[in-house]
Image 1 (cartoon, rainbow, N blue to C red):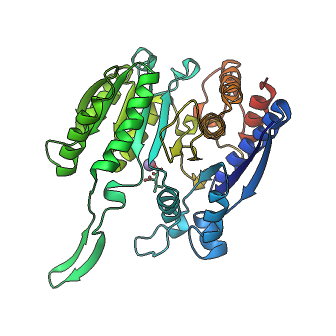
Image 2 (image 1 turned 45 degrees about the vertical axis):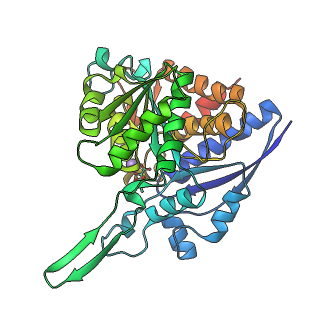
Length: 364
Ligand code: IPM
Ligand code: MN
């Protein structure tokens, strides 16, 4: 039996309540598997600004560095939203990604049969959707320099820079190839090579990397065409790899297919996921802090529970425990229980903690 150390950063808004469900679930996993999980808590985002004056403190970073994995709720607080604000909760998220070298953001999008009628799409159009986004997370326009704002005699100006090195492109594209190899063998690399220099390098490096993966079919798609194709033909996709901001935008779009942002987990990894060894990572639901519903026990904890499953799989090598959580979620959905975001006629509407309890009761 092993002992694992997990950093838990509940964050803002609905973060603490969905993370509470994940933590309760981890306790049951511990009882059933005999593994021990030591949980060390830290602050991030608005909660950290409030208590520590910064969105990510050295203390929190240290807690993360001493762990096998990081479990994060959500970050964001409308009290700090004004453009003139100097400290922002979101800076905590960007800083933790950069400091921990979490360059590979994995966002699986799966449409549950039970929820196909819940979306704005025709059920037959989305039923077969099951793909994974691999978003580059520590480069591109989010971090590129120069990045500043200044006053000129003719008014204010601001600049952000989309910068990528060959090495940064290659390591993320490899993650895409590795995942595609274990799935249907199809990798779509998304760029804007008809306009952007950084995208032309991206495309070239993707082509060069493909030589090492003769078993994977590589295809390139322009980001605008990809945005359209995701809606028109989501069953087309298997693994998609793209740069930071394109990935940010496209994964929000893709999430609509799953019926609710409350269904989607994510992993941000510091290496290539590998079934035979652990990869350090930070795990967070794709949804934000949803301040308007925080503290009401109505948020959907499923994304957080599926996120926990990803953590068990990728950072702790506990595949059996991971798939047990995924099967439990599936079982609760097929019994007709729904939180309000995925509610459908004829189903039972339940709250955050009840959903957590029901999933735990299905764990074997
Ligand atoms: C996400 C979020 C973040 C991002 C924000 C909160 C900084 O939208 O994880 O997708 O843009 O990366
Ligand atoms: Mn986003």
